[in-house]
Structures are given as C-alpha cells and as structure tokens.
Image (cartoon, rainbow over all chains, first blue to last red; front, side, top):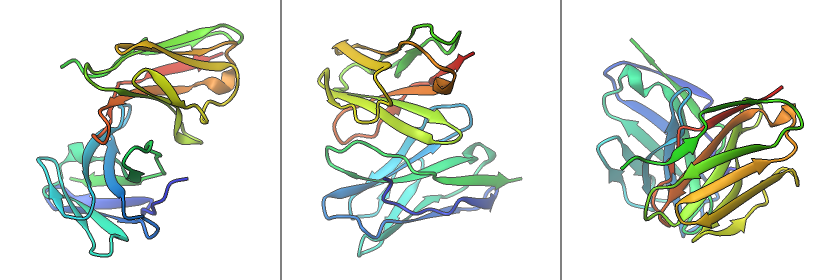
Length: 109
Length: 112
C-alpha cells in the first residue's frame, strides 16, 4: 500500500511556481521521500528524493517538514511540459517503490 | 547512455498465445523491476531482481506470468497463455540501490 496522501489534481499558471503537497504521517526514521512524474504515454521519470534535509536539483526543490510528516515538491517556473502525474513515494533504503495515484498537475497557458 | 531499452514497443496478440517482453537495463545498475500499468489499477510492481536474483515476485498476478534475468544485461517477462485482461503497458526499470529508478519507454500489450 502507498504510504502517502496527495491531492488528486492541481492547476498552476505557466511561469509560476508549482507547489505539490504530500502527506506521509506514518513515515519511519529510515525512510526516504521520493518524487517521480509521468508525462502522458511515457515511463515514470525520477525527479528528486530526500531523507530529512531540503534538497534541490536542476528539476525541482523538495521541502520536508521538520517532523517529516509531510513534504512539498516545488517546480520553480512551471512550463506546459511539466503537465504530468506527480507521484510522492515513501521508501526504505532497500525497499521497492510502490506507486499511489499521484497528483495530476495541469499547467495552464 | 541509451537508458533502459524495452522491446517491442507495441505487441498485439491473440488470446492464448505466448508473449515475451524484453528489457535491457542500464549498464552498472544492479536492480531491475517490472511494472504493469492500467487505467483501473495504476502502476503495479510485478517483480524485482537484485544482482540477477529474483527478490520479490509477490506482485506477479498468477502462474501464467514468469520473469527471468539470465545475466546483468537482460531480462524477460513472459505471459503464457495470454488473456485479454493482461492488456496493459508494461514498464521495466533499473537502478543502483537507493538511486532513483530509470524507466524504459514501456511495451503496450494488447491481447484480443
């Protein structure tokens, strides 16, 4: 079972920051938060992951609350190509990745 | 880096026929995963391998499904006999331990 809760869908205006929330209130100390996205008709794409510190890469930023019970993925300047389903996943170090239903993000022109 | 390579991209077969899906993981990745995606059930993990050894096949739906990884650069997922309800997109992914997974482009299987 997926251990996360995400909104079913969200809209964001092109050029604005997209902030995608995720609740993972049952996360344990050795579990990571991973984010993937799936653009229509493609395989899922890894975005970013973190344990407890905030992380940033060329695609996005990941903000994890101090109690680790929730996190936010930030796409700083959303473009139409960011329209996709975004999956937030909690995973132990050697665990398999189980996908939930994700958030369908619509970028509006 | 060619990424994870899956073949064929599309497969249409008749019910009862054997279907073999193929995957070439990224060189140096020691874990390989097979997923299935349908509208109704989303992305489901079928089986995964570490260092060519099957670790968890609890997601394999039934005995008609089997997967092998004879070496580090090749894996197959076989369905025999195929049924219409097996129609789905099948993804292969590979990774190194806690790295993110890299997915292939998938095989769209249609069983008529």
